[in-house]
Every structure is written in C-alpha cells, then in structure tokens.
Image 1 (cartoon, rainbow, N blue to C red):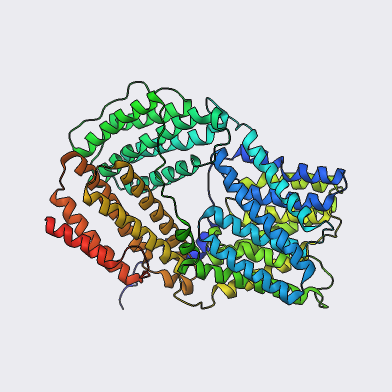
Image 2: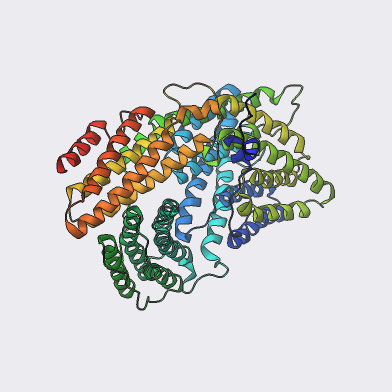
Length: 637
C-alpha cells in the first residue's frame, strides 16, 4: 500500500476567495477629523429640525449628511467639494424626480421610471468613483422621494437634502485637521498627499533589487494617483491660495522624474545606497513642514538610472526653492470618451444589472405593499434603496456584499432594538444618530460594520419621525433585496460576461501602447511623456483592481474573467520596461539589447494574452499596432 501524500495543514484551513474577502477589513489610523465631522453633521441637523417642528425635513437632511459621510474619505479639502457635492446634487435630483413620480403615477409606471433611472445611473457609474457615488445617491434619492411619507413638496425635500450634504461640505472646508501640518491648514490634505509620493519614492529605492520592489512600485502609483486627485480640486479662493497652490503643484511635478528614475532602478534590479534614499525622504519632510529642503545627498552617477535620479533630485531642490508651479499631467476626457465609457461593454452590462435589481426590488415592494402579509408598512422604499448598495461592485464581490449586508443589518437591527427599549425619545435617539454619524468614517473599513452603523442610524431616524420600531421589517426587506440581487447578478446578459473588467483592461492596454509609442518615437517633450505615463499606470491600477475583485466572486462568475490578471501583470512589466527605456534613452540616446529583447518578448506576450482573454476589438489598442511595434523593435535589433 503506497503512503498517503503529505498535505500541508494550512490547505485544510484556506478559505475560498469569496469567503476570505467577506472577512477582510481595511486597516489604518482612526480618521479623527472625519469622526468629528460625522458627530456634528446628522445629529445636530436632526435636533435643529425637531426644535422647529420640521422633523420630516430634518430626517431628509440627516440622510443626506449620512450619505455624504460615507463618501468623506481622506484627501484634500478642495477635492472633497466635488467628491461630496456631485453625488449630493444627483441625490437631490433623484429625490425630486422620485417625489413627483410617486405622487403622479401608479405602481407600474413608477416601477418603469425607477428602472429607467437605474439604467442611467448604472452606465454613469462606470465613469469613475465620483460618478459611481452620484449614481448611488441618484437612485437612493429617487426611492426615498417615491416612498418616504414626508408632507413637504418635492422642491422642499430636495433643498433639505442639499442642505444636509452642504453642511458636511462646509464642515470639511472650515474645520482644521487635528495635528495638521505647518502652514495654512486648508492645504494639509494636499501637502500630506504630495509628501506621501516622496515617501513612496524612497520606499521603492529601498526595495530596489529585492522581491518587494513590485509592491513598492504599486504603492508609488497609488500615492501619485492620490496626490493627483488631491491637487485637482476647485480653486475656492484664487487670490489667497494661488501661491500655495503653485508651490504644491511644483512639488508634485518635481516628484515625477524621481518616480521615473526609481522605477528604472527597480526594473534593472540594482540595489541603491542608503545615501540615495535619504534625498526623497528629506523632500517629504520639507513638504510636510512647508520649508526649504536644504542640501540633499547626491547618489552615485555610475549608471543611467542613477544619473537620472541625481538630476531629478537637483531639479526637485530647485523647484522647492523657487516655489514655482507645475502641471498635474492629467489627460482630460472628452464628452465622446465619457459616452463611450458609459455606453460601452462595461457600462452596458453594469447598467442592465443595476436597472434590473433596482426595478425588480421596486416591483416586489409595490406588490407586497398592500398584501395581507406585508400589511400597511410604509417603508417599501427600503427594498430598492438596499438593492442599490448591494449591486455596487465598488463595495466588493457580489457574495461578499450580500453576506456582509445581511450580517450587518441583523446586527444593527438587534442593537437598535436594545437601544430603543431604554433611550428617551426623541433626545436619546437624536444622540444615537450623532453617535452613528461619528462612527461612519471608521465603519467604512468593512461593509458589514458600515451596514450595522447605517441600520441603527436609519431606524433611529424612523422613530424620531414618529413611526413605530421597524427592526423586523428592516431585516426582512434586506434579505429580500439580497435574494433579488443574487439572482440578477447570476442572470445571463447580452454580450460577454466580465465586460467591465475587459473594458478597463482594454483601456489600460491602449494607454500602455500610447506611452510606449511616444517613448520609441523619441520626442523631447517630457511633459507629454509624463502625462502618458501617469495615464498608463493609473488605468492599469484600475484594471488590476477590477480583475482582483472579479477573482473573488463565486466560481460561476469568476471563470468569466480568468486570465485577465495575467494580462494585467504583463502590462505592468511592459510599463516598467518602457519607463526604463525612457530613462536610458534620455541618457544615451539608444537602447541596449536587453531593453529591445525585453520589449519584444512583452509585446508578443501581451498580444497572446489579449487574444486569450478576448479583449474587445473596439479597444484603443488594435493588435495590428501592437505587432507593428514588436516588428519595429525586432528590426532595431
């Protein structure tokens, strides 16, 4: 009898990806500034409305402040105007449409209106995080407007919604951050974002020549993306802040050649002396303290990438001393590009699923509204509003979202039932709303925790509005929404499954091709090169995130995007190689055989991977162009 093969003990304890994701939580320091804003947002608004006997409008304003609090993430103050304000405007518009549709049309027509809004919001959500938040609030506002029993008119409700979100935006702009860095506290978010870029450059230099270099390069891309967003906010006080803005823009722009040189060193696998890593750290400290850099240690100039690093440090020191401005090197998307994204393969697939989930939930809620089992319960709008959050891929894989939503709702409902039994009304419930508002910024680290906090807050608002305790109905409607979204999420759709992942991967391939073509053509326009480089790495990060999310779905869904992570890895290696080529061409004017051979191999590998995963032929990187570049590289050999 042959011996049994040895199986590692951890093989029995490894969880499937779709379960492991549901148990994973983000980590980091407590965002005390956001906690403070949350405590001062929904609770005080509700209290003021209760005191003037306009409780219904206070409930609407508190809901808007809660939704804005979910979007209140770390970043710059000015960027928060768009990040919080755009979804609030969409939510107010949805509230207005939902109110008048609910008053004027019957159940069937109302369901059709909500389904159409779901299709619009789903396609719009494919444009980016802010658009996704706007789509969510549009649908939530429409459901609330159609179903919430508030006596005021639609315009009054919409204004109350805007006032609630606007109050949180005002707090975000006015309150200083605890422990803010030296200088004008209005720019502490921008300064912290730029300083983190220099820290990430130093981290990549530290890891050069080690296995950690790939992860550190990805961290550098994330830091650059965050700083780019932080500096892209509107100019709220142009005259007063222009000098500070120019200085921050110049410091960000000075980090781009440093990031390029560090990436080239990591690609070459060369270890870097500690002396070279000290320069970026001193630059990070200068950004945080809003001071001059002082003398920077010069690295060795024994290789092209090291010479590029030294030149970049000298340029950064000069930029810091002069305090001049710089460009963010972002590509502005035209209206045609936005429409192509919204109505492309990814936008269509997601829009259909949002429309079906939202519309089906509204239809089920309307059908059950006057049934004997459902009784005269007036919170039917909870069902479609819950489906909106469940169908959002931003919050994790489908099954993970469903499990977390169900567990969080049950926990929150049980907690509220206990609080409701002992707290005085309404003052105790108003205090509970304020507490939940303070907990939202911390709870966003895990969807189940966020759901529990939001459940307690919403149930508190219902009781403050004069309605009975509704914990049981909240649980029942959440479970119904979970079932609907699970069914819709597994339905076959027109076209190929995984369209959103493939669309992002195709965009990343197109950006990588544009960057490579610019480098191989050899123009001297470095600003254009940095713009293309930023676009390439940024779209790749979005594609990798979408691919990783799809890989954590149930096997029946995950199989539709198999192999996309491998193509993304090839693109990452291609971008790193292209960056190394750019640095080498700047120094010597020609490529080595190692650069040429590596480019040819990666272009062939990319073409094969693209065909294997079935990237759409409408992608901006046609295979003919990819093979033409490969042929050109081979001819240069």
